[in-house]
Length: 261
Image 1 (cartoon, one colour):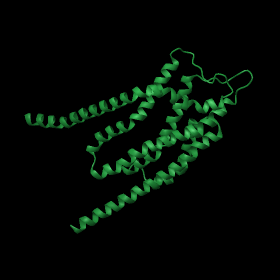
Image 2 (cartoon, helix red, strand yellow):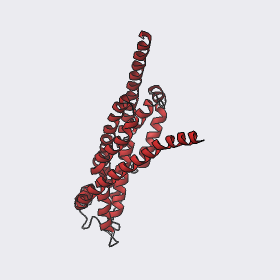
Image 3 (cartoon, one colour):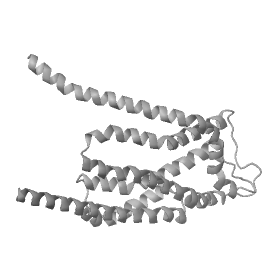
């Protein structure tokens, strides 16, 4: 009984060590986020002006392009901008802490395979956000502003505008993670290039549906998201095919080594 208890305690210790390590990494990430948040509060107004610029250009003839009806609305809008801006600034430190937590549980070849995705993910997110800002916002806001007439004027609220902008930015950034997700699934055996190619027609339907939900109800905005997603799906198939070739080459090398020994 004592031996069984000792084995049970030995089995518990690694879990406790992992929990302690996770707690430490979360604390470091939170500290990095808080440190970044303090200066971001100062720059939040400039960032909001940058985000509001597409709408301001469209509503340049209006005397008051933005309003707020709650006395605290503008203040909390600046805090929301600072919150997300500080996360973007602190993301390298947060990603480093994630890597420090995950890396000890990976083999050396797995670490080398994981690192490219850690760098590719933020790059793809930035590309998606850039497409939303420079490609979708002008088209979408022009469409919405076209409903103005002599009796109705578009005067957006700062909080509601920020919510719309952040939702579109994060939606586009997340959808652009498709190559990373599908490639990781192929690496662990949950997807294959042949399977993705065979299901291309279903992917086209799914991408069209996603583009229709995320973009405003006009053909130009929808097409602006559909075409990059189609391209990213083809890139995912190519990436999965490369992974399969590397896996086959590695297995062949291992079999040759076993035969020689």
